Length: 174
Image (cartoon, rainbow, N blue to C red; front, side, top):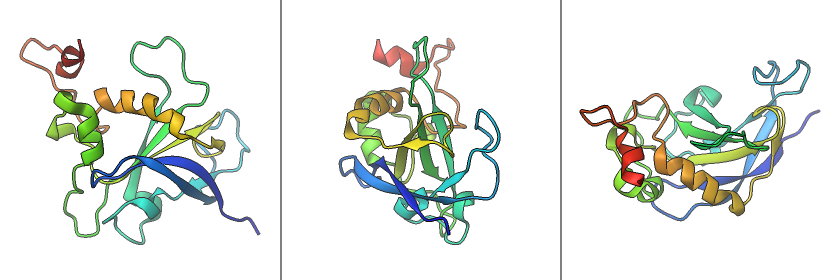
């Protein structure tokens, strides 16, 4: 019988506490990994919902979503070990998750409520595919992840621009 395997991941708590390391549990899954470079790699389903407060119960992976980060803006090479950011999408009561105070503080004057990260955010690291080759992250990954959060809101929201079409987040950093 296959067992649970855990990997070290970064947790950005929504209540404003400092980011810290947690053990992200994974379990075997029956479907193939859509990101795998070739078929046949065993898929391990991560369970970030364990660390997500107010998330809907019984939905498993349908209650959260993820964003793959292969490089930071202006990088011309991808990370050797990219990141996958897990965030909650379905709450227990249908209400929005609380704004993540930790990431809000990181964003500083670049923060925009319309693209705010909400709930507890978990950041894991992988080699070739996020669901078949996870590796342990460490607190040394924090500066890279922080730089990503400084300029990126939650996926699926437009980047804030002013009336001239200039990206306000990018402009605020220069």
